[in-house]
Image 1 (cartoon, rainbow, N blue to C red):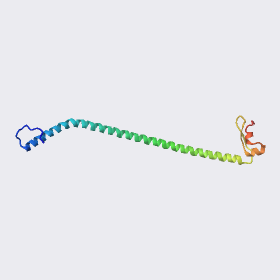
Image 2 (cartoon, one colour):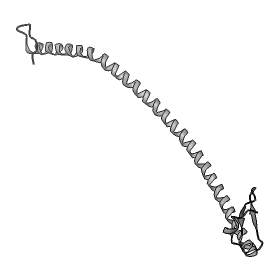
Image 3 (cartoon, rainbow, N blue to C red):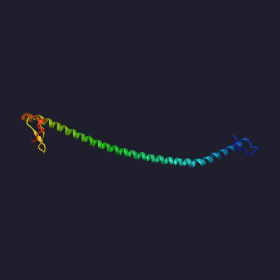
Image 4 (tube, rainbow, N blue to C red):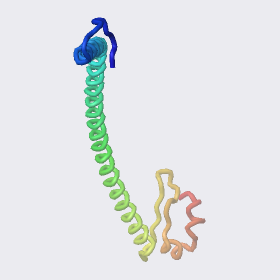
Length: 137
């Protein structure tokens, strides 16, 4: 391939060498123009990757913190549910016990309205609980 031939009668080897040197000069000039731009691009890319790694680490830390908070809240809720179930079971037991005793049990509020009337009170006084709860003492 011959780009420039200004020596007239130059043998083929020298002509090829000159052509190669001219091509190297052209490529070198292109590299001089492109390398700073490529270096700037690579520098920007490296900075962007460093920022991305920093943000990823921050996100992972936030996820860990939030997960720990949720685990703590979950344990607290489980404990609260267990306490409530235990209280409900105790209330059911007391209600069953209240209904099955042979003594009449009558309860009233601070306004002297009847609030509770067990089965033994129904049989002793002859009034059903529904009717007796409407009566003021």
